[in-house]
Length: 196
Image (tube, rainbow, N blue to C red; front, side):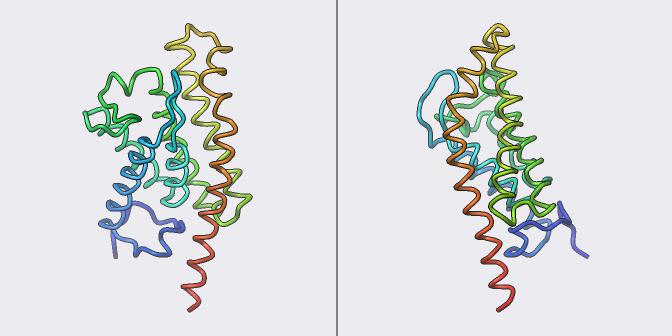
């Protein structure tokens, strides 16, 4: 019997043998991928354009609910504790609880939920991936924009939507199509290898 963080299969489990050591490594890789994606940014105030949401939702859909959420919780924790993992190498609890902190909190919940959907088979097809990405993005937007609106924009939802949601819709739609191409293709490859 092996000890693992999850017993439900996702695409990564087709390539990596389940074990606690593998799960820990995958969680930390998910954290690192998100930290790297945060550095790929186009400045915008108060919320920059980044590849974080793509990383967050790919981490969730490939690692599953538990490992995906843990990856993002560790990302938030190490950034809060001082590692320069947030956008533009920002760090610290002031940043974590600042204007964009709600998006980081949303990352944890979105990765967990998208991971749960992946465990239910949603990541096997492009349509399922796009649908899970839309749901995951909505989780991030609701938490992030609410935090931004009430914590930093005086409760003005017009400003909250204009600064924290609307500018990102096209950008996130493009990322949804990228994710819809990547993860189902990984499933197809895993099936090829399994059948050979």
